Image 1 (tube, rainbow, N blue to C red):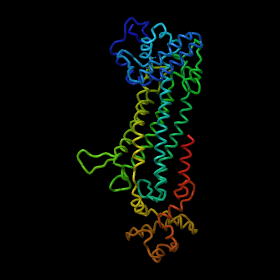
Image 2 (cartoon, helix red, strand yellow):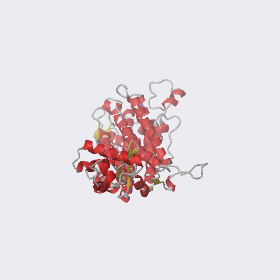
Image 3 (cartoon, helix red, strand yellow):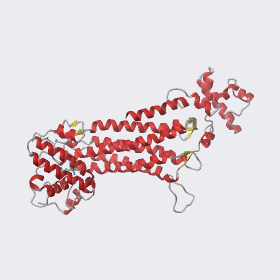
Length: 461
Ligand code: ARG
């Protein structure tokens, strides 16, 4: 017997090849604190049900505490021969409290309900941590919005000049998806807060252990309703991987814009030295590497999600060893976001905007043509005609290489009798932006309300 958790019915130990394939300690060791917490709760349940004396429980808990201390100071390590975190910790517990006592802990639980539980604990912890990081990013975006309350930029569709918008409006359009990601994390955590502990291998426990007490001790809202589902389902893992991928995608969209804005051609932003990088050969370079890594890593997060979904597809009930493959993708998505988000937030918080350049470009590309058409509608012209007239004005100006507000009164009248000199009132970017007062529009008072609403939404999560 090799000391593995399942040696009894085997005459021979596992081959070296199998052991190498099967081993998961190199990635599941980070679950050790959750495994130890589960063991403490399980030991209490065993004592309540009469399988441990009060003294045995006390010695068991003391041993588990010592393992936790050595884990935290880094001295507790799995051995080469350990298959997974569960086996390693049982071996280490037995080494500490002796095999007579240490050997009692496994009663009524299986690695199948353990691993499903530990995975959820890990995700819930990191989900909270990532949520706080997303809040920091939303705060940084909101801060930039409030510091540039009046700045106007060219709003684009198809990456072409479309209509002028407030920079704050544009920035907040990146904050809202992140607010929804926070809501997704919150909603997901309600579904994740169900404990598989007590499901055993698949069929539940015969020992009269109380899964509710264990669930509550581990911070879950309640135990699972079905022991097969509890050990076999990983939809909660996939959903978490999706929310992390969506966060990556939402950051990547802003990253792409920052990369464009930082080009000489746009010239909308400058990156702080502390949040940009240089080139090893070109001395003048200042590169947006954080934004590029955000864009790159979001592809990786999508890969983690799709790989996991492919693993789960078509698995029969109940536990299958394929499920060991759920951990690395999620651990990776967590690790990438936890290193990316603080850097990304720092970059956003320290961006400096060239608002004069943005304002100069905002009316270009005839981006006030819609304002002309809507002004005509307010004068009682049907929209079809208004669109025609405004289009004709654009053509007239384009042919003469002038702006929409350059024609004389006579020239306006020659394009259409509807174009009276009053049209000039809407041919400023300030007038255009101020006129879009409808709910959710880019008028300054609407954007101020939005900023307050973002802050409120984040505070309520
Ligand atoms: N290491 C496994 C996993 O990550 C848990 C152990 C269950 N193994 C088993 N043969 N039943 O899913």
